[in-house]
Length: 288
Image 1 (cartoon, rainbow, N blue to C red):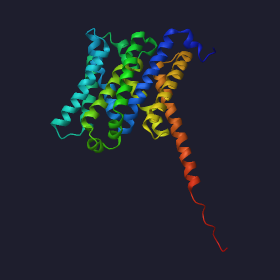
Image 2 (image 1 turned 180 degrees about the vertical axis):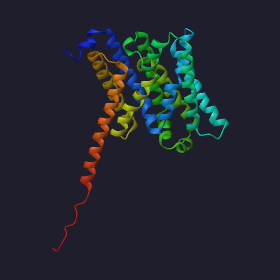
Image 3 (image 1 turned 90 degrees about the vertical axis):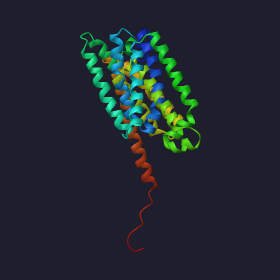
Image 4 (image 1 turned 45 degrees about the vertical axis):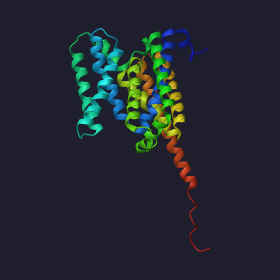
Protein backbone atom coordinates (compact mmCIF):
# COMPACT_ATOMS: atom_id res chain seq x y z
CA UNK A 1 0.00 0.00 0.00
CA UNK A 2 3.02 2.30 0.09
CA UNK A 3 5.09 4.04 2.77
CA UNK A 4 2.13 6.07 4.01
CA UNK A 5 0.09 3.04 5.09
CA UNK A 6 2.49 0.11 5.36
CA UNK A 7 3.81 1.02 8.83
CA UNK A 8 0.28 0.86 10.23
CA UNK A 9 -0.79 -2.26 8.33
CA UNK A 10 2.36 -4.16 9.22
CA UNK A 11 2.56 -3.19 12.91
CA UNK A 12 -0.39 -3.87 15.21
CA UNK A 13 1.01 -1.63 17.95
CA UNK A 14 1.12 1.30 15.53
CA UNK A 15 -2.46 0.68 14.37
CA UNK A 16 -3.66 0.55 17.99
CA UNK A 17 -1.80 3.79 18.63
CA UNK A 18 -3.50 5.41 15.64
CA UNK A 19 -6.97 4.32 16.78
CA UNK A 20 -6.25 5.62 20.27
CA UNK A 21 -4.90 8.88 18.83
CA UNK A 22 -8.04 9.42 16.74
CA UNK A 23 -10.27 8.77 19.76
CA UNK A 24 -8.22 11.22 21.84
CA UNK A 25 -8.52 13.74 19.00
CA UNK A 26 -12.33 13.50 18.95
CA UNK A 27 -12.65 13.89 22.73
CA UNK A 28 -10.13 16.74 22.84
CA UNK A 29 -11.82 18.54 19.92
CA UNK A 30 -15.23 18.45 21.60
CA UNK A 31 -13.98 19.50 25.03
CA UNK A 32 -11.25 21.78 23.67
CA UNK A 33 -13.79 23.83 21.70
CA UNK A 34 -15.52 24.81 24.94
CA UNK A 35 -12.14 25.38 26.61
CA UNK A 36 -11.25 27.85 23.83
CA UNK A 37 -14.64 29.56 23.69
CA UNK A 38 -14.95 29.95 27.47
CA UNK A 39 -11.33 30.86 28.11
CA UNK A 40 -10.79 27.83 30.35
CA UNK A 41 -7.22 27.19 29.21
CA UNK A 42 -5.86 27.81 32.72
CA UNK A 43 -8.10 25.22 34.39
CA UNK A 44 -7.34 22.79 31.56
CA UNK A 45 -3.61 23.26 32.12
CA UNK A 46 -4.05 22.96 35.89
CA UNK A 47 -6.00 19.71 35.54
CA UNK A 48 -3.43 18.30 33.13
CA UNK A 49 -0.71 18.88 35.72
CA UNK A 50 -2.82 18.46 38.85
CA UNK A 51 -3.41 14.74 38.23
CA UNK A 52 0.32 14.02 38.67
CA UNK A 53 0.29 13.37 42.45
CA UNK A 54 -2.74 11.10 42.16
CA UNK A 55 -1.12 9.04 39.42
CA UNK A 56 2.19 8.86 41.29
CA UNK A 57 0.51 7.79 44.53
CA UNK A 58 -1.59 5.16 42.74
CA UNK A 59 1.45 3.64 41.05
CA UNK A 60 3.38 3.53 44.32
CA UNK A 61 0.44 1.69 45.91
CA UNK A 62 0.20 -0.73 43.00
CA UNK A 63 -3.12 0.69 41.77
CA UNK A 64 -4.07 1.63 38.19
CA UNK A 65 -2.80 5.08 37.28
CA UNK A 66 -6.18 6.07 35.87
CA UNK A 67 -7.72 5.78 39.36
CA UNK A 68 -5.08 8.09 40.75
CA UNK A 69 -5.66 10.53 37.89
CA UNK A 70 -9.38 10.59 38.71
CA UNK A 71 -8.65 11.23 42.39
CA UNK A 72 -6.23 14.05 41.50
CA UNK A 73 -8.71 15.69 39.14
CA UNK A 74 -11.54 15.49 41.68
CA UNK A 75 -9.28 16.99 44.35
CA UNK A 76 -8.38 19.82 41.97
CA UNK A 77 -11.98 20.64 41.02
CA UNK A 78 -13.25 20.27 44.58
CA UNK A 79 -10.42 22.41 45.95
CA UNK A 80 -11.09 25.22 43.48
CA UNK A 81 -14.78 25.20 44.38
CA UNK A 82 -14.03 25.17 48.12
CA UNK A 83 -11.60 28.11 47.96
CA UNK A 84 -13.89 30.26 45.83
CA UNK A 85 -16.87 29.55 48.11
CA UNK A 86 -15.03 30.14 51.39
CA UNK A 87 -13.01 33.20 50.39
CA UNK A 88 -13.17 36.33 48.27
CA UNK A 89 -10.42 35.04 46.00
CA UNK A 90 -11.10 34.67 42.29
CA UNK A 91 -11.27 31.25 40.67
CA UNK A 92 -8.04 32.02 38.77
CA UNK A 93 -6.23 32.57 42.08
CA UNK A 94 -7.63 29.32 43.49
CA UNK A 95 -6.63 27.43 40.35
CA UNK A 96 -3.12 28.89 40.47
CA UNK A 97 -2.64 27.98 44.12
CA UNK A 98 -3.83 24.40 43.68
CA UNK A 99 -1.94 24.01 40.40
CA UNK A 100 1.36 24.81 42.13
CA UNK A 101 0.50 22.76 45.22
CA UNK A 102 -0.56 19.65 43.28
CA UNK A 103 2.48 19.81 40.99
CA UNK A 104 4.80 20.22 43.99
CA UNK A 105 3.10 17.30 45.77
CA UNK A 106 3.57 15.15 42.69
CA UNK A 107 7.28 15.95 42.56
CA UNK A 108 7.63 15.13 46.29
CA UNK A 109 5.89 11.77 45.83
CA UNK A 110 8.01 10.93 42.79
CA UNK A 111 11.20 11.89 44.64
CA UNK A 112 10.45 9.29 47.33
CA UNK A 113 10.93 6.42 44.88
CA UNK A 114 14.16 5.70 43.02
CA UNK A 115 12.35 3.36 40.60
CA UNK A 116 10.01 6.06 39.29
CA UNK A 117 12.12 7.35 36.39
CA UNK A 118 10.52 5.20 33.68
CA UNK A 119 7.02 5.60 35.07
CA UNK A 120 7.46 9.39 35.29
CA UNK A 121 8.39 9.62 31.60
CA UNK A 122 5.27 7.65 30.73
CA UNK A 123 3.09 9.84 32.96
CA UNK A 124 4.42 13.11 31.54
CA UNK A 125 4.75 12.19 27.88
CA UNK A 126 2.48 9.18 27.43
CA UNK A 127 3.10 5.72 26.04
CA UNK A 128 0.99 5.73 22.92
CA UNK A 129 3.11 3.07 21.19
CA UNK A 130 2.37 0.77 24.13
CA UNK A 131 -1.40 1.26 23.89
CA UNK A 132 -3.29 -1.95 24.63
CA UNK A 133 -6.71 -3.03 23.46
CA UNK A 134 -7.96 -2.32 26.98
CA UNK A 135 -6.65 1.25 26.74
CA UNK A 136 -8.39 1.68 23.38
CA UNK A 137 -11.66 0.36 24.84
CA UNK A 138 -11.47 2.75 27.81
CA UNK A 139 -10.69 5.66 25.50
CA UNK A 140 -13.61 4.70 23.25
CA UNK A 141 -16.05 4.66 26.19
CA UNK A 142 -14.76 7.98 27.50
CA UNK A 143 -14.97 9.57 24.06
CA UNK A 144 -18.56 8.34 23.67
CA UNK A 145 -19.47 9.82 27.08
CA UNK A 146 -17.89 13.16 26.12
CA UNK A 147 -19.67 13.32 22.76
CA UNK A 148 -23.08 12.24 24.13
CA UNK A 149 -22.87 14.71 27.04
CA UNK A 150 -21.89 17.51 24.66
CA UNK A 151 -24.88 16.72 22.43
CA UNK A 152 -27.33 16.50 25.35
CA UNK A 153 -25.99 19.72 26.93
CA UNK A 154 -25.40 21.52 23.63
CA UNK A 155 -27.75 24.46 24.27
CA UNK A 156 -26.72 25.24 27.87
CA UNK A 157 -23.04 24.79 26.97
CA UNK A 158 -23.45 27.20 24.05
CA UNK A 159 -25.20 29.80 26.20
CA UNK A 160 -22.59 29.34 28.91
CA UNK A 161 -19.80 29.95 26.42
CA UNK A 162 -21.10 33.37 25.42
CA UNK A 163 -23.38 34.64 28.21
CA UNK A 164 -23.69 32.74 31.52
CA UNK A 165 -26.47 35.08 32.69
CA UNK A 166 -28.50 34.20 29.60
CA UNK A 167 -28.10 30.53 30.48
CA UNK A 168 -29.63 31.20 33.91
CA UNK A 169 -32.49 33.16 32.35
CA UNK A 170 -33.16 30.30 29.91
CA UNK A 171 -33.50 27.86 32.81
CA UNK A 172 -30.03 26.28 32.65
CA UNK A 173 -28.24 26.91 35.98
CA UNK A 174 -24.84 28.19 34.93
CA UNK A 175 -23.01 26.78 37.97
CA UNK A 176 -24.38 23.28 37.37
CA UNK A 177 -23.43 23.22 33.68
CA UNK A 178 -20.07 24.82 34.42
CA UNK A 179 -19.41 21.92 36.80
CA UNK A 180 -20.47 19.41 34.12
CA UNK A 181 -18.09 21.09 31.68
CA UNK A 182 -15.23 20.84 34.18
CA UNK A 183 -16.00 17.14 34.68
CA UNK A 184 -15.79 16.60 30.91
CA UNK A 185 -12.42 18.36 30.80
CA UNK A 186 -11.22 16.25 33.71
CA UNK A 187 -12.49 13.03 32.09
CA UNK A 188 -10.66 13.84 28.87
CA UNK A 189 -7.43 14.56 30.74
CA UNK A 190 -7.75 11.47 32.95
CA UNK A 191 -8.22 9.05 30.06
CA UNK A 192 -5.94 10.74 27.53
CA UNK A 193 -2.88 10.91 29.79
CA UNK A 194 -2.24 7.21 29.06
CA UNK A 195 -1.88 8.09 25.38
CA UNK A 196 -0.16 11.47 25.16
CA UNK A 197 0.79 12.12 28.79
CA UNK A 198 -0.17 14.83 31.25
CA UNK A 199 2.13 17.47 29.76
CA UNK A 200 1.05 16.91 26.17
CA UNK A 201 -2.71 16.38 26.55
CA UNK A 202 -3.07 20.13 27.06
CA UNK A 203 -1.63 20.70 23.58
CA UNK A 204 -4.15 18.30 22.03
CA UNK A 205 -6.94 20.12 23.89
CA UNK A 206 -5.98 23.55 22.57
CA UNK A 207 -4.22 23.37 19.19
CA UNK A 208 -6.84 21.54 17.04
CA UNK A 209 -9.78 23.28 18.76
CA UNK A 210 -8.05 26.65 18.38
CA UNK A 211 -7.57 26.04 14.66
CA UNK A 212 -11.23 25.07 14.36
CA UNK A 213 -12.28 28.29 16.11
CA UNK A 214 -10.23 30.31 13.60
CA UNK A 215 -11.82 28.60 10.60
CA UNK A 216 -15.47 28.37 11.63
CA UNK A 217 -18.18 30.31 13.46
CA UNK A 218 -20.56 27.48 14.38
CA UNK A 219 -19.64 25.26 17.33
CA UNK A 220 -20.36 21.87 15.65
CA UNK A 221 -18.20 22.89 12.68
CA UNK A 222 -15.41 23.99 15.03
CA UNK A 223 -15.53 20.58 16.71
CA UNK A 224 -15.52 18.72 13.39
CA UNK A 225 -12.53 20.70 12.10
CA UNK A 226 -10.73 20.21 15.41
CA UNK A 227 -11.33 16.46 15.29
CA UNK A 228 -10.06 16.23 11.70
CA UNK A 229 -6.94 18.24 12.51
CA UNK A 230 -6.35 16.14 15.63
CA UNK A 231 -6.76 12.88 13.69
CA UNK A 232 -4.42 14.12 10.95
CA UNK A 233 -1.91 15.15 13.61
CA UNK A 234 -2.11 11.69 15.18
CA UNK A 235 -1.50 10.00 11.83
CA UNK A 236 1.34 12.28 10.73
CA UNK A 237 2.89 12.33 14.21
CA UNK A 238 2.96 8.54 14.40
CA UNK A 239 4.29 8.23 10.86
CA UNK A 240 7.11 10.72 11.55
CA UNK A 241 7.84 9.04 14.86
CA UNK A 242 8.12 5.64 13.18
CA UNK A 243 10.22 6.97 10.30
CA UNK A 244 12.68 9.06 12.34
CA UNK A 245 12.61 7.17 15.66
CA UNK A 246 11.45 10.12 17.77
CA UNK A 247 8.92 10.42 20.61
CA UNK A 248 5.44 9.66 19.28
CA UNK A 249 3.23 11.66 21.65
CA UNK A 250 5.39 14.77 21.48
CA UNK A 251 5.55 14.56 17.68
CA UNK A 252 1.75 14.38 17.48
CA UNK A 253 1.41 17.53 19.58
CA UNK A 254 4.08 19.34 17.55
CA UNK A 255 2.23 18.50 14.32
CA UNK A 256 -1.07 19.71 15.84
CA UNK A 257 0.60 22.96 16.91
CA UNK A 258 2.07 23.32 13.42
CA UNK A 259 -1.41 22.95 11.92
CA UNK A 260 -2.63 25.72 14.22
CA UNK A 261 0.05 28.16 13.08
CA UNK A 262 -0.56 27.32 9.42
CA UNK A 263 -4.28 28.03 9.92
CA UNK A 264 -3.46 31.23 11.82
CA UNK A 265 -1.24 32.46 8.97
CA UNK A 266 -3.81 31.50 6.33
CA UNK A 267 -6.69 33.23 8.12
CA UNK A 268 -4.62 36.39 8.60
CA UNK A 269 -3.82 36.50 4.89
CA UNK A 270 -7.49 35.87 4.06
CA UNK A 271 -8.63 38.67 6.37
CA UNK A 272 -6.15 41.13 4.88
CA UNK A 273 -7.23 40.29 1.36
CA UNK A 274 -10.91 40.60 2.33
CA UNK A 275 -10.33 43.93 4.06
CA UNK A 276 -8.41 45.22 1.03
CA UNK A 277 -11.18 44.19 -1.34
CA UNK A 278 -13.79 46.01 0.77
CA UNK A 279 -11.93 49.33 0.90
CA UNK A 280 -13.52 51.93 -1.39
CA UNK A 281 -11.42 53.32 -4.19
CA UNK A 282 -9.61 56.50 -3.20
CA UNK A 283 -11.08 59.66 -4.85
CA UNK A 284 -9.06 61.10 -7.67
CA UNK A 285 -7.04 64.20 -6.76
CA UNK A 286 -6.65 67.42 -8.75
CA UNK A 287 -8.99 69.22 -11.12
CA UNK A 288 -11.27 67.18 -13.30
